[in-house]
Each structure stands twice: as structure tokens, then as C-alpha cells.
Image (tube, rainbow, N blue to C red; front, side, top):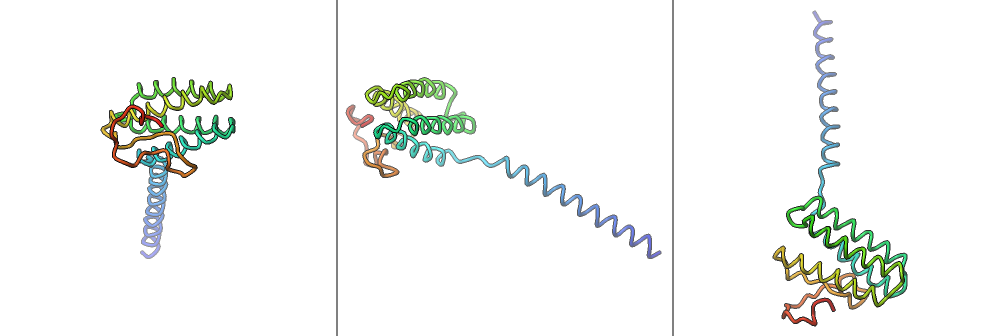
Length: 165
């Protein structure tokens, strides 16, 4: 009588351990793949990359500028993948065109063309913010090497000359 009870207990315990291990593995996989970066966090990353792109070009570090442009573009695509109702496919298509314009200026090491295309890209950021009812998030050319000098923090008085500078 003791032997069957011992076998049953061992089998039940083994089954319990296997089930728990299987469940833990499933949860670990689900947890590892279900995390989605918050949109605000992606936008902060893009703001930093925006500033780094600008300063790299201004200092003539064109390889760094090209790298930061690619990183900025990748973050925007990620935002579009996870938040398609906010970052639409048409926004991404427009951004791809502007990215190409900035990229051409970087490849040519043309600072004047970079300035124009960078300002257009920045204006598009602000246009998206406005459409998303977030016009108070106004991005501009960075003023200093501070991590967040490329955002206007004062209340905006919608003047044309403020748009990107």
C-alpha cells in the first residue's frame, strides 16, 4: 500500500513541477515579447536624436549625422508600428521623404541644404504634434548642447518666425 501511494505522490509532484515549469516558460516568453515602449518614451528618444543629428551636422561629423538620422527614423517607425492611430502610415511616408532629403544633404556634406531639410523635418514633427492635439510639444533647432534645448518651453504665440528656429 505504501509503494503505490509513494509512486502516486511522486508522479503528482513531477506533473506539478513540469506544469509549473512549462507555465513559467510561457509567461517568460510572453513577458519578454509583450513589452511595448511608451509613445512618450519613444518621443524623448527622438528628441535627443534630433538634437544629436543637428549638432553632428553643425560640427561637420557627417557619419554621426547619418547614424543619428537612421536612429531617428527607426524610432519613428517603431512608434508607427505600436501606435498606428497616432503615427499614421501617411505620417511615416511623409517622414520617409523628408528623411531622404536630409540624407542627401548629409551625403553631400551640404550644410545649407541640411539646414533647409532639417527645418522641414522639424516643422513636420510639430505638424504631427498639432494634429495629435499636442501643439504644446513644440520642437525647434537646438540652441545649445543641452539635451533638451530643442524644445520651446514657453507658451507659444503662433508667430511664423518661431516655427523652427
